[in-house]
Amino acid sequence: MSFLDQTCQILNWFICSLCAPQLLRLWSGRCPRTRRNLLLGTAFVIYLGFLVSQVGHIVPQHRARPSKANSQNLQDAAQTLSLEIPLDGTFLLSDLERPQVGANDTSALPNVVYITLRSKRSKPANIRGTVKPKRRKKQTVPLHHEIKDPLVVAGQEKSLIQKPLRGTNNSVNKRRAGEVPEKARDHQEKFKEKGTPKKDKRHGRPLLRGANVQPSALESNIRMYSESPPPWLSKDDILSMRLLADSKIENIQEAPSQYGVLLVLEGAATVNRSAKGGVCSQGHCGLMKRPLDMSEVFAFHLDRILGLNRTLPTISRKSEFVQDDQPCPIILWDTSLAQTDNDTHSSLKLTWGAYKQQLKQKCWQNGKVPKTEWGCTDIHHYEWSKMALLDFLLQIYHRLDKNCCGFKPRKEDSCVQKGLSLNCDDQDNVDLTHIIQRKDDPRHLVFIDNKGYFDRSEDNLDFKILQGINEFPESAVSVLKSQRLREKLLQSLFLDRIFWESQGGRQGIDKLIDVIEQRAKILLTYINAHGAKVLQMNE
Image (cartoon, rainbow, N blue to C red; front, side, top):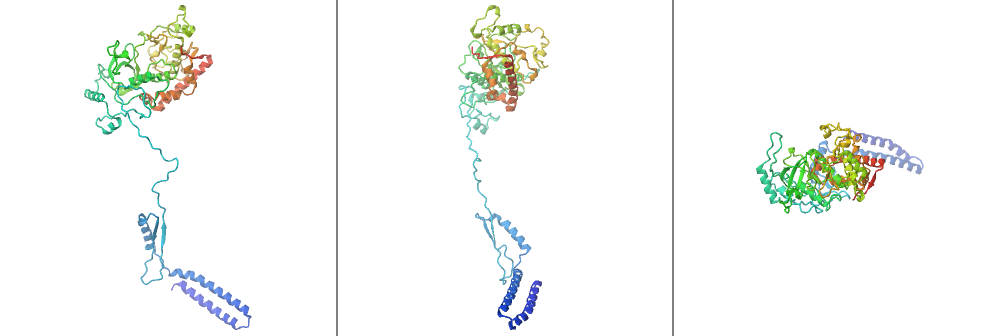
């Protein structure tokens, strides 16, 4: 018996000993019966309440108290059996929590605990807007060297053919790129047997005499993802671009009176090789220039977007024989151009003073035949406006300002290297360069050697290019005002994969367009300040 039980028993006897004489006295006395009954009831209620309060302390003492070891075993067992919980999430733990008592002890009460756990979902709920759409499988189309259709059918893979790996027996490569044409496979084997071309010991350049070179990849460099090309590029432009980018190089020749080398490309099977001038007379040759002249590709696309259409199709291409495998601009070789002079590289001789006189007389404008004393050439008056506009946006100075008299040249400029920048006193007698016409069309110019300069600051622009120009083509000015020049340039330049990648992708192209847009704003301000006219020049 515990100390608390003994204390409760002593209190019970003490209260009974005190209350018993008083109850007998009340019962035997002469007190009224009503008062006596009230006192007895009150005493009984007090004693009953005391007993109830004591029972709450005594009864839990007889229950079996689980030890700390049993509770620890219960936790370990619950963790061990957590993996065996049924799917309904209910588990009975009666045996684990039952106290360890003797067999004859019947007063121990069972301790049953129900644990309910929330079951995990097998799949997450599909919340609206979070389910990714199914992607369509892309199909690849093998590209042959003979390009018959200039357009790409809509829905084709963005890249016409994946670039094959060096391993020729790679099954994954065959599944991606499709079957390689037999001609291309035979040529690859011959090229591997020959090995890389021998290099010149003096200059470190490969010897190109009679070399038969083909592109290092079968992937088309002209990316076309829609049924029709951009509206500013004609069907002939796309054909020429693909010819320059994807055709095999059959031979390399020296270019006459030009900077660069002449590439003889593999054309269609219907080319008449016995024609006068050979293959190049049929338009299957390209002029390859230095890697530093890559801005000519940008000039070609800008010319088409502005609606001038005076440059020759130009693309960028990598070749096996170029040092460090750098991309170079390839310009379509046009045999219809008039013969040029070796000094001025022009089809006619024209000085700066005679050029300004022609601008004043507006030769051949509105079909008016010029007089003999005006000193007009066969070139139409509108052609000078188109050339000046393109030259100002790209800051091409060698045509109208070869001595660099309209700006501060750098050491890298050709006028400084040749010492021409000091001859600015007598500018009227300075010859214009790269003024080219066609044999069968002497009224219109052809813009060649269109290397632009994007690193010239706004306060050092050559405004001499715009001297005497009072009319500008409406097609070009409308594009500059439409705020869509960037969009069109991005769409057009993206077609040339090699040029896009060589400039650093979208980030590098955006920097070039920023320069052109800023110069376009300056040109529009110049037109408004000088009151120049904007005319439709579709003569």
